[in-house]
Length: 246
Image (cartoon, rainbow, N blue to C red; front, side, top):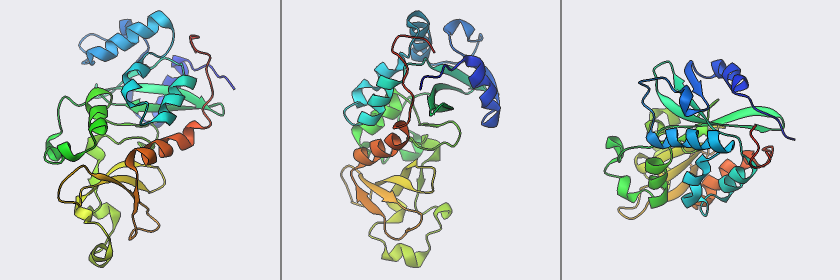
């Protein structure tokens, strides 16, 4: 199934999720004084010239680690839209359809440097995951639920936070130090992909915390789990003919 997505369709859908002030599909539509990363202005200019999505180039360094995302870009050729909310915070929207239904991923501006609250841990985060946050997006998730993608660093949390409701008795029986397990991806169903810093040094490892079995987190390959969780939804993405504006 191929379904055209107009800017107006996206604008009509936004009030369910965010109070927006700007939705631009070309650089010429950007209001004066809006702080937009220069690489995003270049993306909008390139898209206007080509009529297709141009941001996928920024993801190429991650295609080997995230083959499902790479496949998404191969199927999905719709140009991105720049969104500014009422506080003038900007993000990029990746609109697409799946089974004829309209969805969008939202990518926030890349980080200029390691975030202060995680500066001590930053060197132990897998290199390419760090690169994603400083080169592509500080979080890339469903607009509707802030899930199914790497979370913005402001939404990272330790399993020791109250929200996870792990009491002292349960924590004592777990194979990890919950104060050193950082949640970085939410699947929308209550489960989290985490980075485990329990070892005294070295690169953090992957762990899944299951909300229905909280005392028994599962050790996983971080990148394989990340790609698999994103890829669950991408199986149903509708294809768009490359080079044809939607």
